[in-house]
Image 1: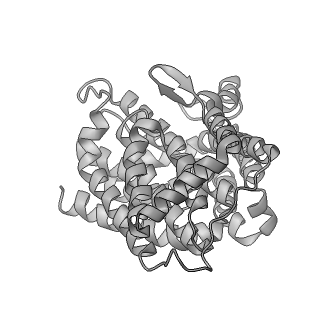
Image 2: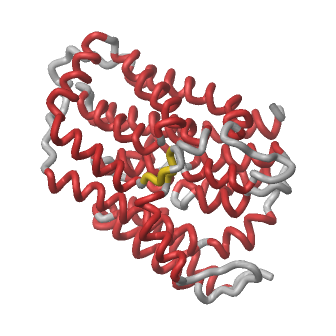
Length: 370
């Protein structure tokens, strides 16, 4: 059937704006949450002019309600809805209140261990733990530890980007980690897969666990030559105000709303065209998850009619690409917001690392068929 040229052009303009705007225009970079929110509203409005059989698009009460409540109840732990907003706010307040003993403990551990060991712990251990304590909490712990370490600005950014790749992968192993895994299990809960709590761990663990360990080793390599006793390497002192803590949580709330609108707004494109793409090509097309909500993409692409290699390819493509740019993953958003990482700083390492990682997994999954 296809979409009208004018509709396609509108979506293309929004996509390019989201992709390139933060790199080209400083005011967008400084107000990324608001910019993405506006782009999400534009995408939802354009989607309202699309009519596709069996697909609800455009503005409707259910999507407005989802956008308002998703940041408050996006994860379910032991059946209890837990929101990203609450976690960021509560943990931020705890650190605000007790930042001195927390940072002191981190620095004491850094002094007792080599920087290589610290890097491995941050990247690999947090990647593994994100599957049981959520990617959000893992990201918050990451940025506090990175902030307390005596590292240069570039080293902090590099370590954070590498760790967020690891956290993004690890969080997909169980429904506790992130919404994508919850949606995938829900879509595959019936025949023939009958997906349960450990389904994604059993299917993707062979790829994700070694990947997390490799990212840990890469983190060690990136920081291995840094001298922690160098007087030029200083840990940053905690200087946040109560207002800063609250505003960071509000910005995360707005970010999640923006991603909800963007993901739902682009549904006509995703459902109309992505379903027709062969799995080997879709793997690379899923690099759009670097700026779009990967949970929405998973909901559109995953289904019981797919073979296991197709499911593996789709999910791994989404998970890896999510680390390439700041909007790609919640851990990226939290980390970049806390450490003040710009889109250019993130992409400098995130894009090449993501492309290389995707190429390696493509060979493993589709060429060697492991």
